[in-house]
Each structure stands twice: as C-alpha cells, then as structure tokens.
Length: 371
Image (cartoon, rainbow, N blue to C red; front, side):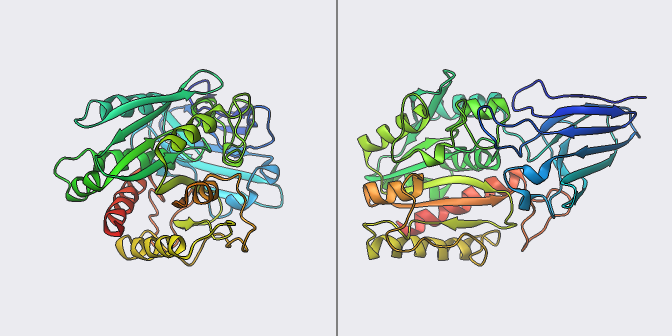
C-alpha cells in the first residue's frame, strides 16, 4: 500500500518530492518572501503496521542547521497528545530521516506540537469570558487577522506578556495558554496576588499570518517581527506597530517575550545588558528574577544561553532591548527548546506543550515573589 501526505491545513508545511510505498522524500517550503525555513507540519495517511520512513532533504541550508543534531520529530494521532519519533540527522548530506511503525491510520508529524489558529481563537474566547478580563483588538495583521490582547488586574505595575513573534515557535503559545489558565484561576494564590499588584496585557500570538501559513520566523511580508521594534511600519510590520503603540499608552514595567530556540537544549533567559541607558537597579531586578526562577523550576537553568551584549551595543530593533531602553522596563526573552531539555530529559515527549504550560506557572509565581 502506498501512503499519502498532505499539508493543506492551518500551519501545514511540507513539499512531497516523491513517495515509494511507505517511504517518502520531502523538503520544507520557505517562508513567503523569505529564505527562512525549518518548520514542518504534515499529515500521513497509512495502514496500521506500515514501516514509515520520511527523508527531509536540503536542511544544510535551513535557518538553523545546528538545530537538527540531537533533534527528534513530534507526532500525534489525535492532535492532542504529542510524542517523539525515531529521528536521525546526517550533517554531511543535510538530511533528516524519521522512522515509525504506524500505530494508527492517520499520523500528524511536526517540528513541534502545533498551536492552531482555531485553538488560539478558542483560548481568547474562553479567557475573555472570565470575570475581570477585558478584551482589546490592538490592530490587524497584513492579512487582516486580529492582534488579540487580553487585559486583567487592578494594580499599578504594567506587565506585558507577548508570544509568537516567530510563528514556528509554537511552544510560546502553549506557554501563553498556561499563563492564562493560571491567571484566570480564582483559587490560585499567586494569581490573586498578582492581579492586585499588576495590570496584565497579554498578546498570545503576534504573528497570526505566519502561524497559519506554516512559517518559521516571518510574517506575510517575509519580515522578522523581532527586528522591527525600533521602526515598525504599517506596510511591513503592523503587528509590532500596534502592540508598541498600545505599550506607549500604558507604559511597561515588566515584560516577557516568549520564544523557542532551535539549537540549545535548555530553557533560558536573554536580557538587555547592552542598552545605552542601562540602570543598575534595572539589571539587578532582571538578575534576581533569573536566580529566583532557577530556584522555582528545575526545568530552568542559567548555564546555557546567549552571550551578553557589550555596553552600548544592544540591538534595539529587538523587543526586549527596545522596551528596556524605551520604558526603563525589566524586560526579558524566555527561550524553550525544540529539542529535549538536557537537564531533565523525557524520552517519550521531549520538551512538550505540558512542560511549556508549567513553565509559565513558574514564571508567574516568580514574578509574584519579585513584586
């Protein structure tokens, strides 16, 4: 029997170069108007027991070739529970080989557990129904999708949480789901405490066009939104423009930009050390948060991560540095792995939606401590 493969759905991305029985030769479509590619998501129709083999080629030219060694593809038969598959990468040929003995007639395979736009709309609708929550549409994307913002809390400290500037980093919206679940749980003591101290402004998905199109890193115009924060425009990056305008209205005291990292097998923070107007108390609060989060969550660590910018050399086109410079905010980027967490590996699921959500709980509990 010959398998069939399809990716004509929300966040789908694969090119079928050839099928031979239960094996397929595949490649990944680039982001529109961009050379970025790494995200894949496709559906396989097969028979139970089929020895499936998928060879994805051309990955030496992908956005992050260092992301493939040690990586295992995600799969699901019900689109709820995601597990990892037997995966090998040949750096010499730039090919990723995925193997699996089929246990169901339909199998979804993805770079990470997807977070669909339908689930996004369900999340926004359900949270907007909660007591004390205000919904705002901050603007629209280039393709006309809403940039949704959920606001809650009665305190004076302005906290902005935003995710998925890079749409292929779907763990970021799983993190958001966890954060919103915690903040809207009336029995959660950290949530009650935080909502008295803070006014939260939460944007679960800043790049709905790229998310729906199956992009890794860019919006409809092929623009990396996290390089637009110094000079966003209505023509290229209205998603950033409308969010930054809303931030100008409220001010920003604390901010967290939620991401995933392709190569580093760990959870870590990136800060704003190189901004021109860096204040010692500002950096002290960031470092204190980092230390407290490491104590609160065994999934978080401080050994692996990005290097710090030299004084005055921060890239102000990125949101974390722009907000720290613009508002004097304690801002940070949190990165989760596409691979497994090196320190606490899970051979079945690797880094997962569930762990992303629990990390959000830990981040909010830590923020409550800081305040």
